Length: 174
Image (cartoon, rainbow, N blue to C red; front, side):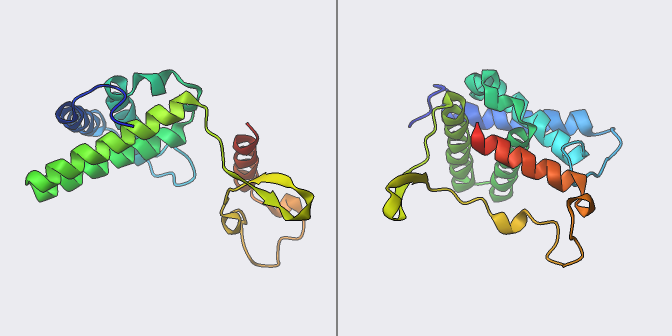
């Protein structure tokens, strides 16, 4: 897929730099909030801001899609844009600019693909049953709150961990 939003790569670079600059300016005098368990922390809010600013012109289809209701996606896009701009600024040469353009094109392509909402997981035959099972890894080891044996009932599980599990399964089923 090649730049479905039909934006020249040099313009993507300009959009990204402007979005990062606007994010810096917007959050410059705001009180820093640290909240590693949600998207309410300043760093995540800034990433969301940068993503929305960038995608407004780079992938408006994404912003109109159902996936745009998920702030986690915006955090990932915003961090990617910020990191790519930072890396290209560190290099300060043609190679850094080329990496920025290609990286931003990749971000836009991924957003456009997600906006289509027509993603299918590959499937394989499961055992002798011939049931077609989707190939997916969920990183289930990370689902647990702890490996310790002190949690012997659900009332001892942190509600945020339970909510996270519920949201993961909800996403898988939709």
